[in-house]
Image (cartoon, rainbow, N blue to C red):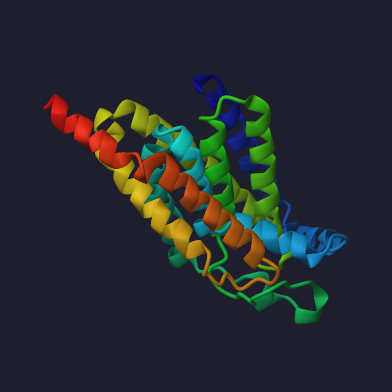
Length: 259
């Protein structure tokens, strides 16, 4: 939806401004403590499952489901995956900033699940959650559902502080970068016709179907997440089979008859 793109740019600007404020005020550590401790008014299972929502395999399963109903999302998802990998891993490997568990006293904050110490900036989970949410928001027709998805995406990003894995600055920059790459992915597919082909759609659908199937056995290192992972995996694969793979032979035969 083209009318939503300016709003997304404003959201990117707001997150970027907050990141600059946190950086210039040197409040990253203090803000981490506040967020991490406040979050534990809720059960660990809530934050563990929200972190799963920000996992790449979970995100691609959701993109697969949405792409089965909005096929151009499949083309955009392929661009998103390529750009996202370059951006996140380029910064993570190049900067290698320490995570909270490598800097702070282990008993001074909560950690849920695995203890991570390296490659903190930016938050890859935050990038994934917000890029996926942004891409969906730019495509689905129901604006209320789109806003709810953006809110869920940011809660998933915020969960990275709740589980003790990331600084607020990591989350803000990762979230802003994710939204920006989502915006770019939509713009690039729209601008370059060769990115809109059915071949790319089928390739991406196959890639996402395999990833969604693997989600059911994926060990993400967090407790309480298996039921949601398995349910999402099954739903995504079933939707893909019904909407894409089962009808495919019929479409192929029709194409041959026309040619």
